[in-house]
Image (cartoon, rainbow, N blue to C red; front, side, top):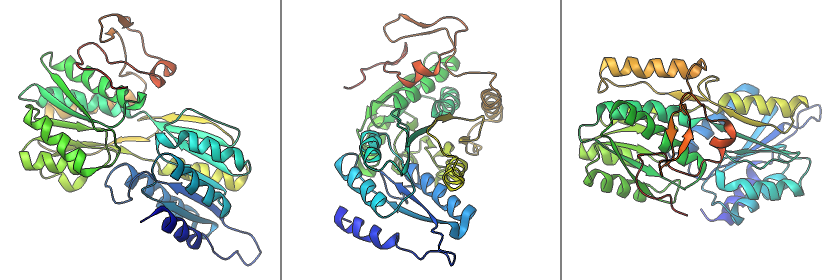
Length: 356
């Protein structure tokens, strides 16, 4: 659907009656980078929208636009939502950061929540999940299960979030399998099933027998199924592939956060904050492991998850060197959030360059 048609549909979607007492429902908007049926990232954000509706009933009115490119189109969609009376707008992709800040400056009475970014304002909060915790578990499993010692990784954009994931997965794969190699393909998209499938097939052709992804569709798992190799669900459970290629998954559980922040707008307690939660709060969950993972490896993975959730283990605990061999973290040293938030380099053992 063209953007003009999307905006016209949005204008209709948000026009609703007030309550009998004249009180308007709280209007909550969501801007999505992909389709709600992607089976991954956008699907899970939309589950959060549905949870808000279930929690508050007719006290809220929700609106959303899917497939919004990161850039000027995003500004237009956010502006239209604000003009249609949105009280709170969730912008759910890293590339919406500057558009969110720009539109928020024009609508100081509207509250904005930007996912995975780092720029805040009086009416802009940021939120993200510690996906790297789940990557550590996946890396451990991949290192244990690979028969070829080659793991394929489909990367979206060279931003700290994605680089953290690659490093975390490789670090924990290498700990249990010193011979493991990671082959990385950058696709420069969040959601493009054709590109994602092509990347998976290329990695499999290079010998990878396990595929990890930081993209949003189920296409890599479908390619893995066709080739008879293994993979993990990304952002959502992707349970449709449980009987074939999928052996586990990282699930982004946004619903509690969306409910909490919507309630804060409704009761007048909303303020600009920076939230970065993980397994400890349940924002990062791990989907059920299949019997393709041996029982002892499942037990090890579960122990790691429990230790991370309890704060007893941090995936980035030294000694860890940078790719060039220089020391990043000394023995027992834990990376702080500032270092992780701006992570821009590979750790030792990861081959290749990070694209500009």
